[in-house]
Each structure stands twice: as structure tokens, then as C-alpha cells.
Amino acid sequence: MKKRLAAIMMAAVMTVGLTAPVYAQEDSSFTIGMRFPVTIDQMQQQTMDNITELVEAAGGKLLVENAALTPEGNIQAYERLLAAGVDGLVVIPAADSVLPRIKEMCENAEIPWSVYYRSILDEDIKADVESSEYYLGNTYEDEIMAGYNLTAKMGEAGCKNIVLFSTALGDTTGAQREEGMNQACEEYGIEVINEFRATAQASDAAQSIESVLTTHPEVDGIFIAAGTITPGILPAITSVLDQYGRDDVKITIIDYPQGLQDAFADGYMLAACGGHNVTDPLFAASLVLNKIKGTPIAEEAFSIRINQMILESEEDVVNYFKYCESGVSTYTPDEAKEMLFKWENDQVTRESFLKVAEEYTIDSVMDRHEGLVD
Image (cartoon, rainbow, N blue to C red; front, side):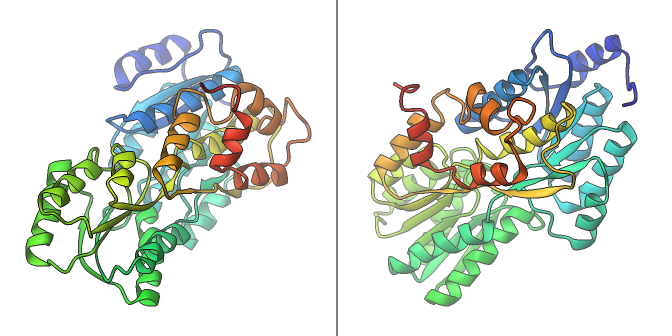
């Protein structure tokens, strides 16, 4: 591997160039770089803690570049991490269009990389990326099925006129979730009467739903396709529904944001899909770690489907936060060494990797961590 920068230059870039906290282990022999959001909530903090512990258990350190999830922010974040001398990247692309540039950067630096939270939808870009010896694969969720399942639950509850809160046009994850939503809408005779994209603030979401309640009183459902992109969106929306006395409006949501338990308790929430957020990047990072350690999981890049939990009650929410976001990693260092680290356990294979990801459920986490959580 090419020597990219002297240690003193790397230290300088880490000090000046990174705007997010740098999680590090002093005696580590390699570094992994990731981009993470500008603002961090409880779920995102747990995700960062999980990744930090995983990388440190492998003997490395994690460098975090704090940047917005935009194409420009993507490129700048990974350029800075490469300038800091990382030995591998774990990438969340804002859009497929940024991937050829990231591929080029990693090839020039001769470092392995993987993608998390995303599938590559553009077939030409996918073929180009997968042609690189440095690209290891991606972790993803069945977003179409998630969108379908949650919208179907509204259909089963009798909803006919719903509002969509989703990501900006062009975001591949949002597009897939909406594809599933549209399938369920057609099946259950549901109409999307309004949609709001990339809502910046909770106050904006509140104003949007208030406007809908005024202009479309027939609204009876709300599908929030990305509950973590707008901090505070759920309490903001339910507060407006309270003010208008609209307890007949039912909500489904992907991700488990602030206010989820209250929304179930108050009768607004039908179902929430998620839990993958804190787990998905662990598998993508493990691909890179195994490659750096000289024990690649597979000879060719492959995709790993992470199971998504569906919570349907206040009790489910309590158990999720108790076992998955209470400070204990989804996979502890000992569990990672057994299930994810091939250099620690030669029984780890592509097939076992896929099996572990598929078996991720609230029940499996509770069983593994029964004695670890108060």
C-alpha cells in the first residue's frame, strides 16, 4: 500500500480539518474513515459508539468527518479523510453519482472501501464500482419492502388519504421506500394527497401538516419515510394533531426518532420500521477490517441485507431502546470476534456473514444481551 502522508501531516489534518469528534485508540496500527452527520442524536451516537468499539476491537482507530449528506459534502468529506491518511473507508453515498469519484480516490490511494445504508441502483455505476479490486461490497435494507409494509398497515387500518414526508428527489433510499409505498397505495386504494421533501426543521414539518389539515381535512394517515433527517419531526407533527383533535390520523415511520414511544402511547403510531441504523455500518466496516487484516470475507464484492425490525407497540419500543440503544453495542467485541472477524474465527464466511445479518431482530439481541443490560 502506498505511503500517503507522513504521520505528522496526518496529525495536523486531523486537528484542523475534522469538525466532528475524532474517536481514536492511541496504539492502533491502522485507521478507518467515515463521514457522519452534522448533528448527532441518540441513535446516531449509539451508531458511532458501536463503530468505534468495533474498530478498536480490531486494533484500529476511527476518524470521523462531520459533513452534510449531499454530493458535494460527500466528496469533500472523503477527500479530507484520504488526506488524513486513512487505511480504509466506509462510505454512505448521497447519490449513486458520487460513487465513481470515490472509487477513483480509493484506487489512487490503494485502500479498500465499502458502502453502508445503500444499494447501487444505477446499473452502469454499479458495474463500474464493482470492477474495482478495492471495492468490497455494500450493506443495505430492503427499502421497497419497508415502504410497502408500513403503508399496507395504514391500508389495513382503513387509511385512504395520506401525506408523505421523505428525502430529497434523487436519494436512492427514499426512492425505494416510496416505490414500496406506491405499491401498497395501489393495492389498498390509498391516495397520497401531499408530499414534503427534505424538511429542514421540525417547525417546518409542523407548518406543513397544519396546512394539510386545513386544506385537506380528509387526511387520515402520514407516512414518514425517513424519520431521522428532521430532528424532532415526530413530536412536532403529533403536537399539531393534538391541537386539531385529529387522533384519527395514523402514522407510520421508518427509523426510530425522538418521541416514538409517546406516539405509540397516544395512539397515533401504527408501526415503525428500523433498528438497522445502529447495526448496518458494523457489517460494512467489518468488510474493510477483514480486508486490512488480510482475511477478506470473500474474493469478490457482495451485498449484505440487514434485517429491519418492525415495532408495533409501546412495549416493543421500550425493549428496543433498552437493548439496542442503551450503550451496549449491538455486537460486543467478543461477539464481533466470533461472528464478524475472520482473522479471529476462520469459520466466518460470506454465508455466515449473511446469516448473522438476516438474524438481526429485537428477540435475537435480547437473547444475546440478557445479562448485559439492566
